[in-house]
Image (cartoon, rainbow, N blue to C red; front, side):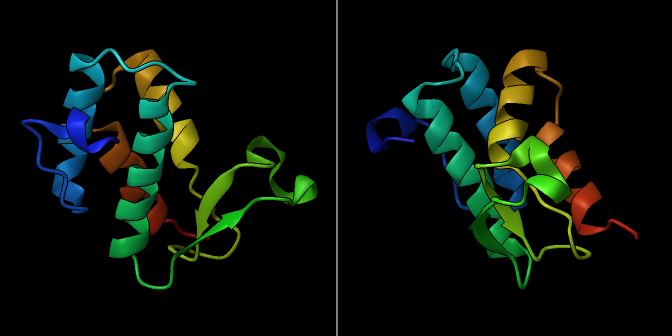
Length: 115
């Protein structure tokens, strides 16, 4: 998200800030394939990376294991092995459905995933 577009919002890389991101998307009518979409997706990924020990960004190039996220930057290491979080898919889902707390619920379910 561009600094100028953050007016009135306080994004601090905490899980609590995820609800503000949802408000930002709705109030600014963010669409997929916009600069805001890319910036928000990166921010969502950074929230998970900064708050889940051992997590890191990778580019998913494994078609056999997870072709849904093939070629996308994803977060790994936040959960059981082979669980990937795609912030880009999470943001596009929120844009399409506007389901409240979607980002928090998605992250929480992955961090506490069971094999």
